[in-house]
Image 1 (spheres, helix red, strand yellow):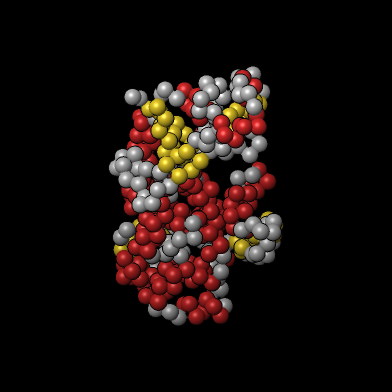
Image 2 (cartoon, helix red, strand yellow):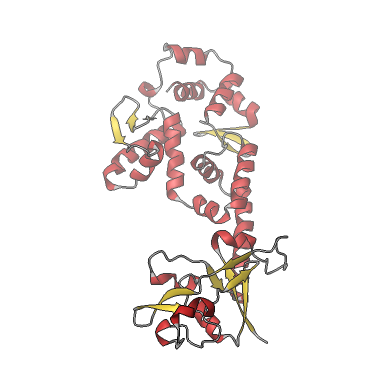
Length: 339
């Protein structure tokens, strides 16, 4: 005999039967639907429905039941066991009730008060497609943890407040997130807001802008934007830069970032070496200055090189040697660290 299957979804779905393995949790789990509900008719009217096993009709208006006071004995709750309800095709009234129930995922467009998806009709082919898509996305997300452009990986890590200064730790954290949220991880990798957030984070670290609890300003204190209470100012400014009113401010941030990252810093923009903080930094060895720059996040790591603007050195030693060889690079790192 053929059957129709309905499965629970949402918060209850984690306890249901695995359709591929057939395994269920150790203890039986049941979930009952009310035998009385409402539906939306083809004419757009709300109608009352009931499930009475021996009555072919589900519309209350069409059910001939005699004594309504005995209704509590006539109705029966549809029950899910292990997250599933298996209905023989001969039980047409129950199938009709389930197909027209407001808890059916297929009926969520009705928009009835308090309506939410509780179950859905099981379609083996559709479930296989969903499973395959989920597996593909999971596989792709885990690949992209290691293969995506480093700038994108760093941007996502910053946006999620994960490790990003150390590549090994960053990949470990990203893998943990991607394995649990593959669809969201892939979405973040392609999100322009996420990339811009990373650039604004760079602008803050390089001293181009200042992020305060309720506003964002230029380095000299001129106000760029006021942030509403309860909003993260860096995220708020990131989203605002896509609005017409802040395009000019964003273009200025980009110009300043470009100057520093390309090593094109005007003489007056390099900090006066007599300033106390700059003096202390200038006295550090190249190895010590490298560690300071790495810890501050102003160096980009592109395996196996550390990169700052146009300068690129292989590993920590290679970049430290570059600092030894280039006074201009040393001045720019000191400037970036001093802001």
